[in-house]
Length: 230
Image (tube, helix red, strand yellow):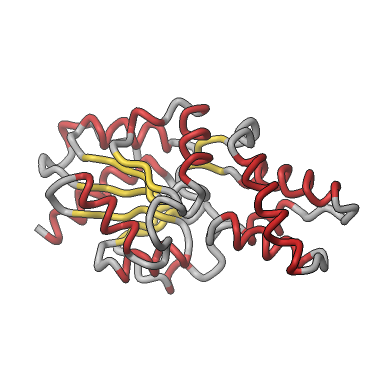
């Protein structure tokens, strides 16, 4: 289905927050390379790209914890490696790409008057860096990272704060994972699941209001959810 043009979409303004890694962008190759840079310094075997994808989702600190556990690195070394990980994060952008159709879908949604933001467990500064590198920053009125609020997903605080900053109107959250689904549930917000990211659980188990694998269909899903809840 082609991306819906603004005239075909609901005129009702919606606040839409997006997860970032695994939802709008495939950043796992950059994160994978960065992790293996750190592991090489520790004289440890590299992790695979699939392992890196599996470690993503709960923020940088949890990624480092999982990486260390996978290569039998002492927990006492995690704070140092977390600091080194963050030092590399802002420049880890060269291998990251938007998912097919994501730019076109964001363009259509923004042109229709919907107000867009990012709510990611990735630290805010690296999130902004990669969005700037990909020329995506202008789509978003709000960009919140895992260190922007007192808690991160699946706690609902980040979503509540993001929606508050976007103003009034219906609210939707788009993500790719169990963590995103739980955050949307905790925030009492309809959840749209992108299936091509880093999810581990069956898509049908996550209670999504819409499930999609092609970003060309996202604007129509937004319209349908607005109509069904309006």
